[in-house]
Picture: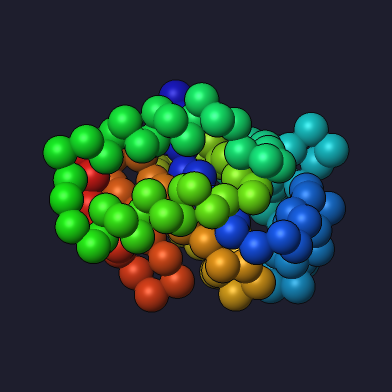
Length: 140
């Protein structure tokens, strides 16, 4: 079973699997990203990554649909971020028998690298939307 997280980058700077790998290796040389998008650390698989540029319209519509019932500035911030997205980095976290905290901790450098190099929003299933400063909008 997988858990999905999605990073929506608003800037024009391209994101690719090799760029993600290079960024992560700069943090910890134990990281690697295979050509088919598997994120590994010390040989263990932690996630599958897909980069979509531009993001899929159906996926964005589905996420906007999930915002129904929310109001205010925080909702506007998220909707504006989704509409501005030029690229989406879709990550399916894989526990592979590990506890989820270990898996999600191994993905933290990915989000730090993306937020340090791109303007964007991170959406986590069942949690909400985050920017580089923290939680923007909580969702179910």
